[in-house]
Length: 110
Length: 114
Image 1 (cartoon, helix red, strand yellow):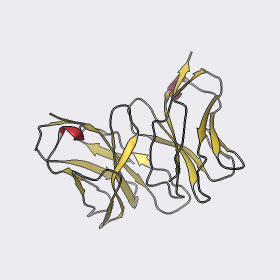
Image 2 (cartoon, chains in turn orange, purple):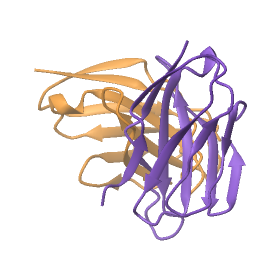
Image 3 (spheres, one colour):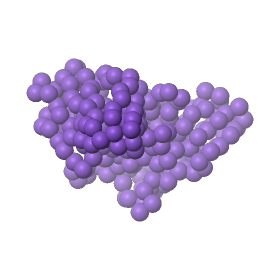
Image 4 (tube, helix red, strand yellow):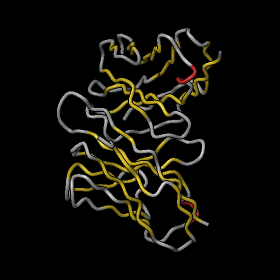
């Protein structure tokens, strides 16, 4: 699986969009980008995944660059409950054997 | 649906003791896995199973055994606990088919080995 690089931490004001970047310059053509988050030592929670097209669901949007070397997770209106560690993972289509890095600590502040 | 359940929530063991961490899911998922998370670190894959009767090793399998006799259950056995196995253990499951590849994680078991 390709290695991903994320900033250690980010702050975001409540109600504003949170944009979390991820670099995956060595991603292969059949690897997907998955995002999970972990709130206060709970089990990780799936957010979204994509291959090359932008994706949106009820939680977030995923923007993948055309060359697929980087992506951005967007939480459109961050709330205090979105404070968590966010993990960007490049893996196969089925997303089963996940390799977690250190992730990005997102702090949403009022 | 209860989702993925794990027992116990907390456990303290002495070095050399053995125990089994339980994991069960009621979503009829084929794929199940175990991860450990050390303080300040991401999760690491210990063992996984693609269906009943089939298991395989992940990134950090040493010191752990698994078996998968039913679709619902995937227990993790510590044969002889060591302080290095102090960690939080998460079980996860997912469906191998369909269009959704979301993994569902349990609440975790916090294990301390003294």
